[in-house]
Length: 218
Image (cartoon, rainbow, N blue to C red; front, side, top):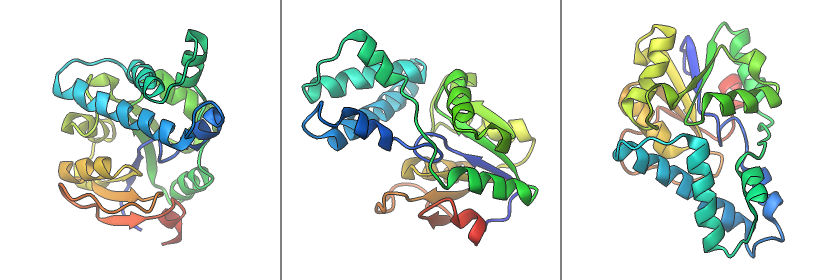
């Protein structure tokens, strides 16, 4: 376990699971896995483009636009209500999320979420999954109107807790996010849930794990 007084977590894909979206579209598209992967990929691409172009739009808006692109690419026809329902779909927490957060809190560690999501969306997802009591802070990129891996986003966590970057352990299932956090100076843990190869650009994470249970077990 990395010894740090603060652990900050990515939310989408790290604490909560996109897997439920695949079952939502099974039978509606030829390959639900490919559809959701395209949706997620375009969502992140739009966030990176918005940051690079200094043209901020909130993550819910980008998620809707990414859905439109993926739907068109995969021949999925939906009406406006179905599209909005898909955009706002509730994502369940991974089974290891709450035990990991509670385990860290039991050791006196402060915990937080740092997410590309809007404050409203973060609060709703955390509350729906019963995670609120195990988190000290919910931090949204809305405050800087840019997306990870912009350094100003990671700086929100150091400002909130009043500590230096190296005093924070950052946990993400996204390799590019773990790299960005490591470049910023966080002690970074990549939760490689998908058994993916390591990123080849930027600083490597200090630790790689396959589930959040490893944060407590060792």
